[in-house]
Each structure stands twice: as C-alpha cells, then as structure tokens.
Image 1: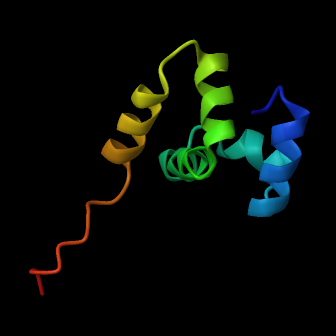
Image 2 (image 1 turned 90 degrees about the horizontal axis):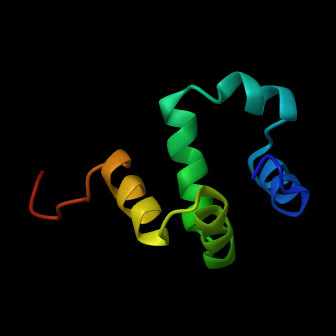
Amino acid sequence: MATDDERLYPFLQATGTTPATLRASAGDPGFLVGILDYVMSDEATLMACAEALDTKPERIAAAWRRLGPPDFDAGEA
C-alpha cells in the first residue's frame, strides 16, 4: 500500500494514520493486524496486495485469520 497512492491515501484517511505514524508502527504486530483487517475489508485492495506481494489472496486471508482474535463462541460465558 505504501507505494500505491490510490490505496495509501484512503487508508490514511480511514484510519487517521499519518505517514510518520505508519513508518513508526510498521513493526508493531497489533498495527499489522489492523492493516490486514483493512486489506481484507475490500476485495480490490486484497487482490492488489496479493499481486504486489506475488502471493495468493488465500495466503493473506489465512494470515489474517491466524493473527486476528479467536472466533467468538456463543457457548462460552
């Protein structure tokens, strides 16, 4: 996203992140999960990300599921 202005600026606007914050947070696992959330929220962004990373979108989705919070289990109290 950082090299694609058409995707970067909407991300910054949607998240309230600045370029400086983006650079400073690049190594924070929680921030990276947030980026995956953003990527997964839009199919076109997911596909562009997969293409830029030369990977399948399914691999990005698997990472998102693995790194995100566990699924809510209605049976647990």
